[in-house]
Image 1 (cartoon, rainbow, N blue to C red):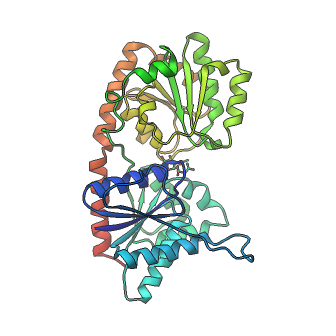
Image 2 (tube, protein in one colour; image 1 turned 90 degrees about the horizontal axis):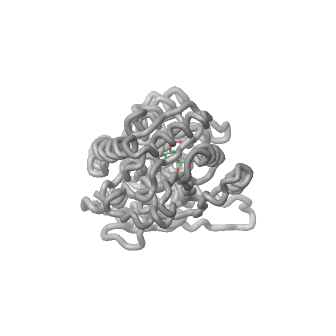
Image 3 (cartoon, rainbow, N blue to C red; image 1 turned 180 degrees about the horizontal axis):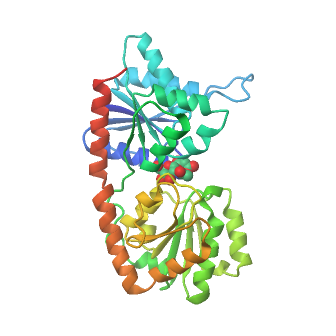
Length: 376
Ligand code: GMT
């Protein structure tokens, strides 16, 4: 099959999932065409059967806001024709599902019927989709998609209740490649490098307010008060400065390593002991899944789709949102060797059993076949 994939190319879960999906589809013999304004951050520069088409946004002095969504629609239309694509799969509703609908209608005029699959990732429904500026177009674009998927049961329910959707929303969860996120593949050297022999707590995100990175620092400070350990913060974003300030204020700055953005996080996760994930809202929590696959127990706030990923008391611990003391106590518990060993083994096994790439990608393939058979 020839598939067009559109996602945000920047650091974040939806772009990571779309890129990993494209790579997996190409490995299974499909031809994959990424269409976006930049090369997706997780996409290596060459892979067989993988192509990248950059959207160039024409400017004109009149345009205070150049219309990216239209330029994207035109690029989608052109790539579909030039490469005879069978289907477009867009990740994150706004503006990708809208652009895909425009491309679909342009192609219809030329007697070509193109199925569009939209995968909802979270904030496209919970934040952007509920902003009055985008609400109606989000609803419209979802309804116009041939197939809609959501990454968790929680997000499916949110979508249906937010828009009173008539259309079916299928849950296809995010996935993880056990060959990449593999503790045994990456040596212990990096753990030694990062922690100097001390336990390593880790957090990876885009440091947006929803991630509550200051809570990560507070949890660490509580754990650090009772035993030596280090915190590794991976990523960057609006709250980085606040997190650094909080670490200084709490007197733990010397034990916190702010690494900035790193594209390839598998070796880092393999060097971690506990993953700290106190987000205010998460439709899924891809980084938590990648931690689990790497044998790292996850301590998280019990929000959104996180309970569908982390098994409380088995592969991690789920605490009420903002319960810093509870999350610190759970983190400290996982640093006890016997508790850690059991949770780590359970985390790897559960991630592989429920979220392996091959199983999830096969579900997308079946969905594509169905969308092509029943294209509107
Ligand atoms: O977090 C965002 O602002 C958007 C989005 C992204 O592109 O990273 O994240 C969402 O999609 C991820 C991949 O499906 C999920 O793992 C994240 O939980 C979800 N973020 C939120 O729901 C806040």
